[in-house]
Amino acid sequence: MEKRLVERSKVIAYECAVCARATDAPEGTVRLERRLCRECFPKREDRRPKDLNDLTGKEWAQASKSVEQYPDTRSPKQKHHGACFPEALALHQIGIYTKTGGRVLDPFVGIGTTLDACAALGRLGVGLDINPDFITAAKNDLSNRNGGDKQSVIEADARNLLTYVEPDTIDFVLTSPPYGPLLQQSKQAFAYKWREHSRIKEMPNPLPYSNDDRDLGNLDYEDFLGALEEVLAGTLGALKSRGYAAWVVKDFRALKRGVPYVNFHGDLIERAQRVGFDLWDLRIYDQTKFRPLVCMGYPSSNFYLNIGHSYIVVLRKP
Image (cartoon, rainbow, N blue to C red):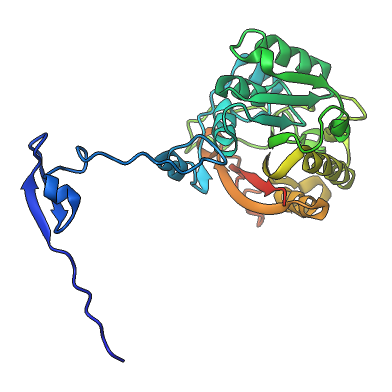
């Protein structure tokens, strides 16, 4: 096979004509001709249309990490809720998948973290929840925020969301669903906290959200998945064509039922695809540094990993 030699451009060292910094440039380039360093060389304005968001190219690249951490800073109302995602996560996701003025839906809005982020970013949020205490907390907090008056908080069952949201009007869905029997099975002081190699403070597990029969968190797992499928179908109808949805979910264990690992994110994906979503991406939300280590199974033959991460399942409407 004939070998072709590619002649490389010669790199010339020189001093920048503006800042006098030592630099270099390939032979034949405009930057060398003008004797400028990379910092002083004027960048052409990027005039390509931004169809999805308002990010720069650098911000776009930084936002594309498949493993992400968020500061676990929680407001008093978030501590009251017990299982909501950080506002930093909502700001990040909404900033990726929407432009200023975009419409965001959270069918399980809880105490309103998604809407708080919408207010901060100049988006129009719509949130539903059946818990009147959470609805009150969300409304009260939004009333004290700039942009809070542009957010809509509705006390309603997420399975009926198309009663309150017009089809094909939502740019992005961001939510975290109630966790079926997970919270019901959790004890307030879960297992044995292994403290010898950890300085993380012990954290009580969140309690069930309500005793309401409509609360998906009170359903058995299979019924819970069936209800989630209804909500997924509703969000698909509410989204605009090619719109994104991000579901923050965590796998768990059901040891009392003899199930060592419940692949919740996989079950969610299966139900989402069943109603017509495309699986677009899967981001790992690393919470390791904010979670105490639990010594489970010691010293038996059963060794369990600490589940120190959640998933951000990114779906897209075809």
